[in-house]
Length: 198
Image (tube, rainbow, N blue to C red):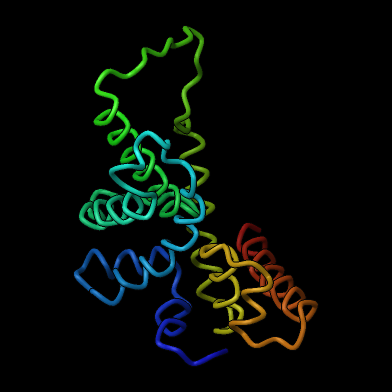
């Protein structure tokens, strides 16, 4: 793996939840690692979501930065319940910021009808409990993996890196070698989680 400061911060082998705990305790390096880990995929996801009518005042990058800073200020109220919860939290923050900006620009938003039989997007209490248990098993299994496998799993699952990026960052000789390493690391994680369920 290339030895850069970014890589050391990005891939220290810690699950996002561990970085979050350190960030809540005031660790600035953990906050920086969270931002480095989450912002690139958040920017890709947010690209083009800001309506053109609002782009005269802000661009998508500004929205993402504002949302990230808001999320960092409110980490103490964030409760991760599953893998990817941090990314989902940040995406919701971006959506909220876009909505605020559109309202500010439009002044009079167009009324939207709500169907009476509209289902809630919230998880049921049972789904929340299952997600929490699954995430705890994931964290425990991640902690038992060898360091390199843990880094590959974090890169693929939590940072959502492509196989090509993993190949480059971990200096695999080919795409097949990178794909095989990811498959092997994920299989070991899954086997550990499965064996802890027995």
